[in-house]
Each structure stands twice: as C-alpha cells, then as structure tokens.
Amino acid sequence: MSRTKVVPIPVMGRHNINAYLLLGRRPIIVDAGTPGSGRRIHDQVAAHGVDPADVSLIIVTHGHIDHFGSAAELHRLTGAPVAGHVADLGPFRTGRVREPYLPTGPMGRLMAKNKDLHMQVEPFEPDVLVTGETDLEDFGIAARIMPTPGHTAGSVSVLTDQGDLVAGDLIANSFFGLVRGRPANPPFHDDPLLNLASLRKMLALNPTRLHVGHGTPLQPDRVRRWASREHQRLSRLQAAGRIRTRAEDGKA
Image (cartoon, rainbow, N blue to C red; front, side, top):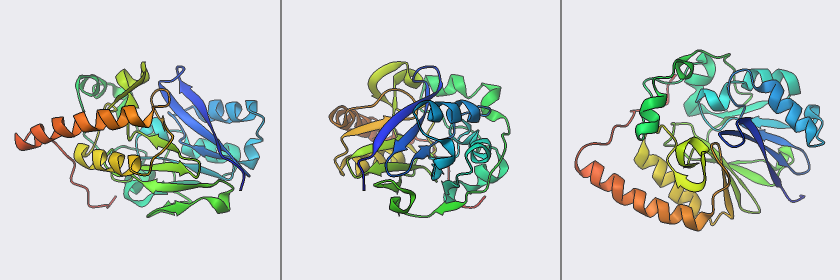
C-alpha cells in the first residue's frame, strides 16, 4: 500500500472550512463542504491531477451542513459512494441538523443566530454505513475511519497508517480557523465531555498531525497541552452543573 498524502481542499476562505483529498493507491475525499460547494471541491480535486471519477469514497465526518452540505452533489459529480456514521443518519436523511446548536463559547452563540446554519440542504443516504472502526484498504487508502463521538453522536475521524489524523470538528483552530495553529473548540459540541474523551483517545494513538475542518494542521503536543487545560475547565463546569449536552439515542 502506497503512502497516503493529505491535501487540504479549501471550501470557504483559505482555511475557514476545509475538505480533504487523501491520495494513495486511489483517492478519497473527506467532507463535502457547505451547500453548493460540490463543484468547487470537484474542480480542486481535478486541479491536483486527480480524475474525480477515480475517487473511491467520500467520507462525511459528521452531520453539520458545513461538512455534509454538498454530499449529494459531490456524489453525483464523482460517482463515488458516500460513507457516514449511523448515529448521524437523521441529519443526513433529512438535510437538517439536530437543533438547537449547543455553543461552546461566544463565537458559537453568535453563529447560532445565522439563519444559514438552520437551512435545509439536499439530503443523502450513505452508501457505506459506518458503525465502528473501518479499514479503508479496500478503497485504496492505508487508513481507518475512527468513531470520535461528542461533537455530534456520529462524528468520525480518519487516521492514516503514517499517523495523519483528519479530525473533522474534533478540534479546531481559534475563531473558526482564523488564528492558525492555535487549538480551540469549534463553535458547537453536542457533548463537550465526550468530545474531549474522543480527542484524548486519538492523541493516545500518537498522531503526527491533526488536519482539522476549520484552520491549519495542529501539532499533537500543543493539542495535548490544550486538552489538559480543557479537561480542568470542563471539570469545573461539570461540578457547577453548567455543562449542557444533547441526549442522543441514535435514532433519526
């Protein structure tokens, strides 16, 4: 199996919203961006010398519309099957995120007022239904889909055999990717404690870099230091009864 290369595909701004192209024996796309960005992603894949018709799989990391908004369109453009976790089938099948959004801080509270985040997008039915750790060798990539619940119930990351972690919204850069290289929560988490546990589980696998949905790649040691501080912060909030989470039963 050839070495996997991780290529960022900007969807909004230079780093604000990212999809990713994984290059191995066959190419895979991770995330499908905002509604109407399928053609942009398709054309950027082609600009990297890859025939979009050769894409073997489109992996959606979770059920927020800046990550699955163009999944149906990208499926039509490439012909590639789409993979998503069973716990986020509700948003995928309805084209609507679970409401209300649960902000992680001031940025999230501000963004939750944006009507574009509450719109209905084109739904899709995953062709590959993820229920647990999933090897991607059959799709031409030396990597695994890793369930990382917390941001949403069905959030997943992709870990390559070389240690690159394509982490979706498990972690982000500050201010929705504007402060590059500085770890931070994304604007929303359904369950901050569970998300932090997923992050620490991935860090225990010693990734070489974390490629995120919002911002530039993060260095693991810096993320570990941030995670330690975040654990202390969330412990204080939990003790005070101030952590709000979404009770998920896995049903649409």
